[in-house]
Image (tube, rainbow, N blue to C red; front, top):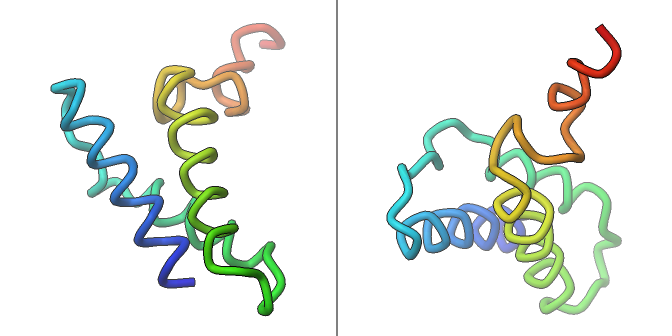
Amino acid sequence: MVLCIATAVLCEYLFQKLLKKKITIQDGSAFLTGLLLAFNLPPAVPFYVPVLGAIVAILLTKQLFGGLGFNIFNPRSWAGYFW
């Protein structure tokens, strides 16, 4: 769990720092992403699987699609289409 959470938080921090965006790790969303990923992985998984999973979850799924609340996988971003 520590590896998933640490990778997710660090990945978000480095991505936002690199692109000179506002650092948003204090909102806890990267922590929660890492925690949920850890809960979905079996205990005997090799160490690189949680690292790659956290990188994909934060960079490809969250940050490259607009960040918290704006990515296409967030239900909040679809609310305008249905309400």
